Length: 464
Image 1: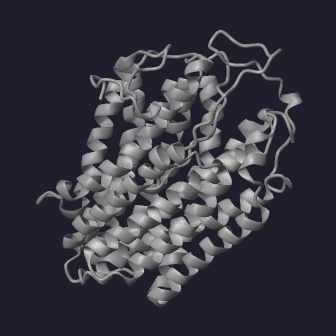
Image 2 (image 1 turned 180 degrees about the vertical axis):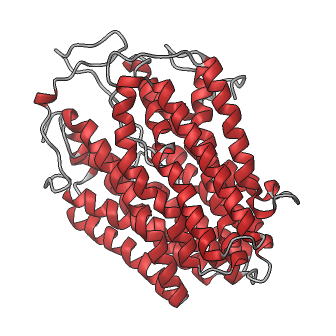
């Protein structure tokens, strides 16, 4: 990646490092984000098969690994504030250590459970406990990476730098499902991807400790608290940070902001209310889809009796979904110049078509096509919701809206995957109907309540 010539198309594909950060350091930061995203989507590829092999109900698998989403929502803002005082490198190291410990322990617990050394119920309890290390400590890394980049790049380079970092999530969600079936070794079985990505995490941690200089930030970097890469459709937002006349700028390029001048922003703010509702409903629809898809593939392709054979198809379909998401975010939105409202509405319409498509599919190709269409829709919806919420408030409130958006994104993964699988377990069509109803509700709400794109994008920066 570092040796490629810059592409003439979207900036997000350009590998040139931003001014102020060397190419080697940028590669390290990119890898910190990449390994966590790839590891989590690889986990999603094998967990339905592992749950089937353990003989536990699908809903308990969803509950076990979505527990970390709640911890992420709680802990990520805490680590972000701590990085302002203790340094970004230290928080990145904590985050990687949490990821490594979580994946290694999860792999060991699941290996013992699959071998019959631990009862299935105890296996899930120990797995959830090990997984909590990722939500609690792994959440320290992404905000620290974003803050490191933000505090070391001039404003003219900021958007390009943050786009490059955000692209690591998208690339990771493609790599994880693609590699997962190849990492199932005879000695480790289905848990091979856990150990493999823990080992990759160790290598990145060592490189980080040796190659990235220690930092002592003097200015708090502003930006979103990055949402956890729980899914193949995770979309960390990229925020343009523009200078305001009359504001002091620190040596690192950060504005010295007086907290007293920033009004408190809550979810109940009338400007945000339609976007918050759209974010919660659409986010739960997306999370429920991702919770169901692995188990649906096993059922529809008749692989429940041979769970190991399901990892390949699940990984392939998740990879198709991730590629479709990247196509939406890196291709369609900039090419068609879709605004927040248009992206949200078109996204929800495509998501309904895709969900109905793969729910009716009878073979691997048709399931992959339907899931790709649904992922394309969610890939349009997510940036539309994020941008709309950002444009609905003033420039001084951008830091707060970033935290609200991150919380909404994380909140969807606390219960929606488990509820979706529970409904799907009662009857397949109940689960799919619930997802389509959520998407339809967002479409109707958006049509009636969301501000037009011309109004949002034409509003002066400090308008309320």
